[in-house]
Image 1 (cartoon, rainbow, N blue to C red):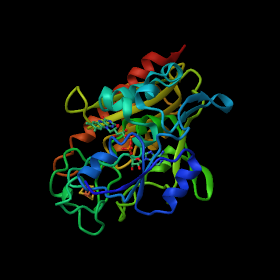
Image 2: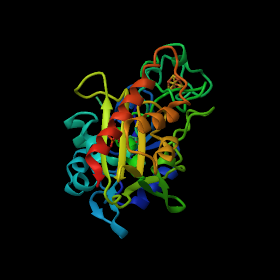
Image 3: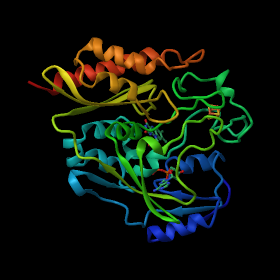
Length: 331
Ligand SMILES: Cc1cc2nc3c(=O)[nH]c(=O)nc-3n(C[C@H](O)[C@H](O)[C@H](O)COP(=O)(O)OP(=O)(O)OC[C@H]3O[C@@H](n4cnc5c(N)ncnc54)[C@H](O)[C@@H]3O)c2cc1C
Ligand code: SF4
């Protein structure tokens, strides 16, 4: 690991100023991703701005029945929070499906959202990679891509976003609160990450120096039920091959509300808007769910070794919706 500077500001504004004045600086939260990447020399910051002393903890009710989650809330605390477990079970389940107990104690809400891809070429500085070194190529397309994306990739990058939390937040319609050199603003989680296009190195829409200060969940949808399902190579900690987060409300056999997001299949948490549009107002049955999810996946462009993800994601999402329909119908 290379030598680096280390500062511990006590206020968000001070942290933003430190980062904005130093292009090679990085915010340090739990460090469970950033420090690993520094050891691999994928990340080479000259300065770490440790967020640990900032007052960005806490989970508290907000205006209009929303729930505000501080950027530094550990994943374990968020998963165990009684309000989250009662009103947003999809979020708690997604967190508990990710990483290990020790990692969840350390990993934070914002750090989880902004963790980097697990593409093996990205993590190996001896290999070319457009995301790590723009213009060097994407060896994953012809090489090892079993775990990589089938939706939303480009000829320049097919990395997947690894966060389970982000998939649940996309389904819930969460909003990220940001503080930057020019002030505060908000961004829907679904707009936080970019698709790679011809600039896979530009992963998110944060402006230089912007700090995630909180994530806000909208009020729970009346009469809706929610859940998260994940398929991985082993039951202990492993990243998603495919996952699905769903929120569903059904009345008299018809869908009155649905939001669905897929994970492990795209470079960002994939909100399944095509499927949602087909489902609202229609019958809450397996045939309808299957047709809608297949319409969503019609745009999939699998490569040699990851075509299995298309039926996997379909079956996972359909099964999730069937389960939610069974649990949630208001007769
Ligand atoms: C063995 C292992 C297994 C794992 N399995 C899973 C899994 O199954 N599912 C899953 O979702 N994750 C998994 N993870 C990833 C883990 O969840 C992330 O490493 C963790 O959530 C990152 O959070 P952190 O606080 O440690 O972030 P850091 O490592 O501190 O930071 C990550 C990035 O976010 C930036 N950042 C942090 N906070 C802010 C902020 N407030 N504003 C702006 N930028 C910020 C940092 O600059 C850095 O670029 C696994 C990790 C390991 C090591
Ligand atoms: S998929 Fe993306 S991260 Fe992986 S090698 Fe290609 S450019 Fe790099």
